[in-house]
Image (cartoon, rainbow, N blue to C red; front, side):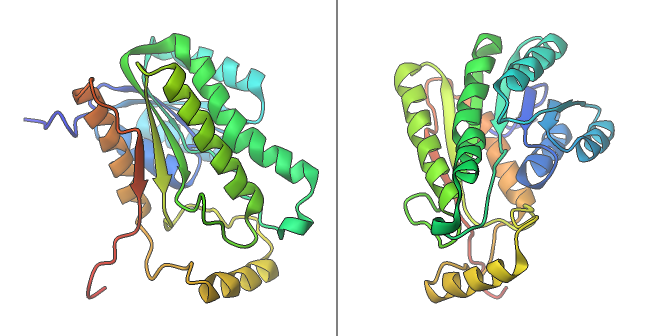
Length: 252
């Protein structure tokens, strides 16, 4: 018999940011646990391949585009009926020294990481089923920024405040902010300048900001899915803020 605190069988779920990293792992794991999954992201080649593997639908989406968000959520709602869970893992992570971060970079980081996530909630609201869960990935480093990632950290801090407003104005809605720590296999460094990264790594190491180990992406994905299961199994409680940090296992 399935434990209701881990069971997501039959859950109608939209995963935004499913083309790589945590979103990709979460979508695959959700299918393995019986959920019906719709996938959205920019990289359609990756998305289509995964959709074929898990029998889901693939939807091209740039979360910096509000009209695209509305179109995709309407498409998914038409296909699935209502949504039992919406998971947002998309992120823009520009690597640049703060004095070298131009206005375009700042605005794009906020458009994706903060405003995009909020607009997903806004567009999804009319399509949410009773006892639905919205799970949004934030950053473990909010409030303790690393060198070279100012736009990312600042926009994630803005996201956290936006989600507090959602909780204040919609206390009946299960909105879970998941603060994710360093995780392997996320492609967060994709496209970054290698020389700059080498400099930043030295700075991070000097400040003690590089962990001895990282969380496994599949473990993070399954932990996030279990948060959805727990929330749906206990409808009078919401795990408002959850931190997922690497655990140091002795001997490894």
